[in-house]
View: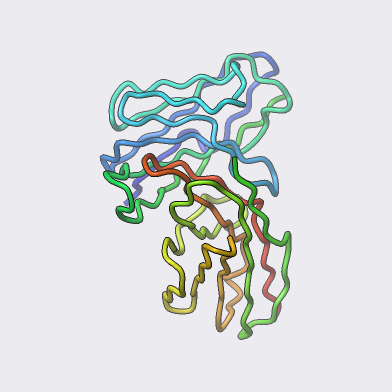
Length: 118
Length: 111
């Protein structure tokens, strides 16, 4: 059973045309993450939500926005995609750590959306 | 900030053992994860270390030395399906669950 679902798996958009990627989860995890991964590189965290609390990484471009309307869904909006934004976008979820030193709380990843910008 | 280093690529023979090293520099270390990622697919969780020592899970083992900022992932009895990238990731801080990933080590298993 799919636990972290991303749609679409492949997305083609035009330079400058806004695009939205979606992620849903059936795990009821309170944390959701968006990563950008370019070919043969490490996943790079863009931002994450702890419940409805949005946390942006300092080096995430303003071109990238996110919405989390409820626990299950999270969206990544790219307002004006450039050629350099072509990448795999990975959504992940985890239970938050409740206290110092507690638990593994590994992140569960979705299959990713491969974005092509033409 | 964090700096995580791992070799770019390793090649090994089916049935052999391969050790993937990861070194890191961080403040507030709070756990190290290993993920496996097949080409074009999502990372999947393999192992977690927060205390020094060896964690064994079937054919895979992971070791951590916090004083040396060092971990390794050991893959035994290699199979062709083990050909993948292996990502080392460090969690930092007492609260929250943000991970910083290394660049990954691509392992190629040959017959």
